[in-house]
Amino acid sequence: MTLEMAAECHPQRIAVTSTDTRLTCAELLAAARAAALGIREAGVKYVGMLDINSPAVPIALFASAYAGVPYVPLNYRLTRGEIEALLARIAPALLITDEPVVAPLTLPPGITVMLRSEFQRRALSAAPTEISAPGEPRDAAIQLFTSGTTGKPKAAVLRHENLMSYVLGTVEFASAAEDDAILISVPPYHIAGISAVLSSIYAGRRMVQLPNFDAATWLQLCRDQKVTNAFVVPTMLSRIVDHLQLHPGDARMPSLRAIAYGGGKMPLAVIEQAMRLLPGVDFTNAYGLTETSSTICLLGPDDHRSGFGSADPLVRRRLSSVGKPVPTIELEVRGEAGEVLGPGQSGEVFVRGGQVAGEYLEQGSLLDTDGWFPTRDRGHVDEYGYVYLEGRADDVIVRGGENISPGEVEDVLLEHPAVSDAAVVAVPDRQWGESVGAVIVLRENAQATDAELQDWVRQRLRSSRVPTAIRYVDQLPFNEMGKVLRRVLKQQFADLKS
Picture 1 (cartoon, rainbow, N blue to C red):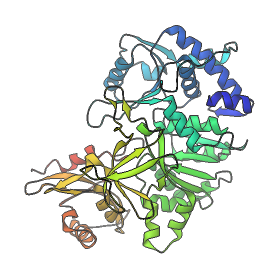
Picture 2 (picture 1 turned 90 degrees about the horizontal axis):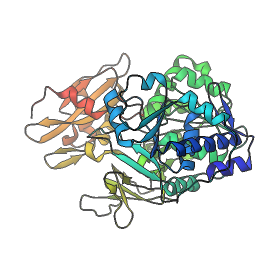
Picture 3 (picture 1 turned 45 degrees about the vertical axis):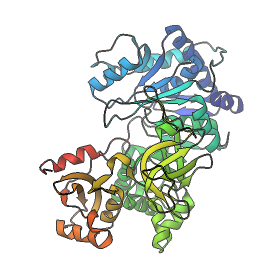
Picture 4 (picture 1 turned 30 degrees about the vertical axis):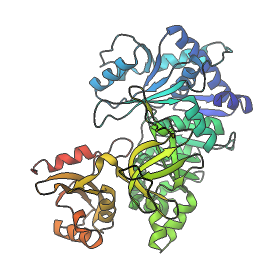
């Protein structure tokens, strides 16, 4: 529906620009329909995408809908064994990929490979055809595998009605100006990459694809393609900031109006520096989950500016929040007994709304009888309605029966003038079961001792929050979406005995 509406409203507007390809809305519609015929003829149950950003991504996404089968983008950064295991779970499937990616793999039975170049060639050279998309709003549209940090990856299912609830609730049709362009640098296997395609097509905003991120190329594309909007994850923005500090002239991007970020916790120092370096850009923090079809909370440009410019610590603190729920989402924080908590009380975040799928292929729906989904994120809502996240529920440190959120200790450590970045994890403790371990990245040419940092925390939080063990590293380990890999950090404390 989104693609047909866009092609009917502005058929000659450019929909997607990549390294060597430009497709109008009408051309993208024709390519998706042509590709769908090939998918139907193949008789597969899924369309897999194992590749970087390219025009094949939006073609395959819409072609899957026309063919009536789920679209399954896969993480090409996984190990050979992990990819092969995921492929076995979607067979029989048509796999769109590239030769260097697929060559090392031993493909399970039922996987039919079509190289990206051939897929695009066939879709773009076929004669125009009129076909209708089969199925109902409740049919599965997208299947995304979770990261599998605590076990076998789960297959999250997003239905057409979930995705369209998100699009219709957050995007105004044909609202983009003809010269609007969004730079897409997040990988296609992440929900942010999928929502970017759907919302951009619906708004009529040209997509500029960046296959592999690096800060210099990102900035160059912003200038060359006259990019107006962009979405980045925290690690990307951090690298952009680092580049601009060395090359301040590259900050001259007169067309760039707005940057949204999400996918992981944004260090306060990074967003503050980004706002200093790019004063004419509107910043938005977008918090969402795969299971919620993308964004559920937003901290908008006005809140960024008021927080950045305020001397009031309560107002300035909002830069560390994820903002307020979008209008189509209900949000509440619950305690361990399931009771709804009040302002300032920490617990698990629950959400409800049409875009919330909360469903896995193996487990079924995790929604309760009233439609609420447990996000597994801990946090609280302040008296003004701003949502503050404190980490994953699984990351909570249980010290002698007391729950400690890593986020509250990290925020205090990051206020220390010598600390550039910090992450907190549970470490074994003979007396308390678990205690606080901190991994610290110091600023360049800065120094701090364990005792100094421990005293810093002790003066600002209860003594139970003081790190009992501290390790120092050059940089924290992050995944490609900017989330710190706490399971890797725990290895820093392998010498500790419970």
